[in-house]
Amino acid sequence: MGLLRYQLFLSHTVTFIAIWYTLLQNPDVIPDGIPDAVVRYAPLWAIVILGCYAVTSIGYSMMTFADCPEAAKEIETQVKEAKIELLKRGVEL
Amino acid sequence: MLYSVILPTYNERENLPLIFCLLHQVFQSNNLSLEVVIVDDSSPDGTLSVAKSLQSVYGEKCVKIVSRQGKLGLGSAYASGLSASSGDRIVLMDADLSHHPKFIPEMANVMDKKGVDIVCGTRYARGGGVAGWDWYRKLTSRTANFLATFLLRPGPSDLTGSFRLYDRKAIETVLPMVKCKGYAFQMEILVHAKKEKMAFAEVPITFVDRIYGESKLGANEIILYLKGLMQLFLTT
Image (cartoon, rainbow over all chains, first blue to last red; front, top):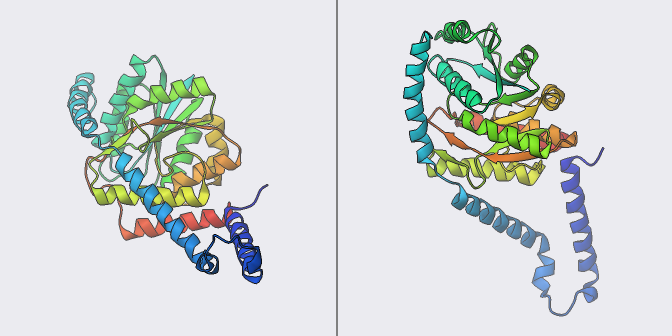
């Protein structure tokens, strides 16, 4: 009986905000290389990264989403054959 | 090993005998036992009489008919079909020829080899695809799937697809749990199955949209889907 999905997301969010708040309160802990703006607007960056991830993921899936016109042709051919078969067997169409 | 294919129909007078014929041919050439359960919701176009004609030609063992008084919805149609069926494995698919029965033997093969509870047809994986969809329709489908995968993560790559092979026990367990309507219905089946620790496998399939617009993608469908998604996000 694990966490519900929204609870999982909530717990991630709460953890993130807790860490972010702690870093804001203790700026000396932040390594030298990381700019102030990154830490201060971290939640905004998280949303931006999430957005990029969504766009990239959907973009990639659109590129790999195949068109299959042969399947449409195939079904039309088989529909014609099926009609003949059904009439032969005496099905009332 | 008997396979029951449950076909809910509403105004499928033209397509029903065709899909049945294809099913019959595929099953015969693959040496598989077939039972088709037609669940008709009082179609005004005479689907029931075509169903009865199929039954008289192919026999009552092969063709079962459940005739319901009024348009009662897909979920209950599946439930009625399930209780009228006697197969060990159940195929749920569209009755309008958008799904081709030729993929069923492959699904059966995968279920034999991998011992999974559910084999999902996927339009998205390599080897799968759609015919007759424009760019916008494809984008809607992919975005909806992305959203559902991100929020719910049930596992399979195609969450709103409706072409699947189920082990009988699996679908009997999960179907009564499903409350959503519309596209979210198919998603909810997988969400509950995952919670019940069921195993999935996938087979690429092709989806042929023969009459554009029949895919019913109005604002209503979209809102219904988002509501279902939210409901599942909050309750599972």
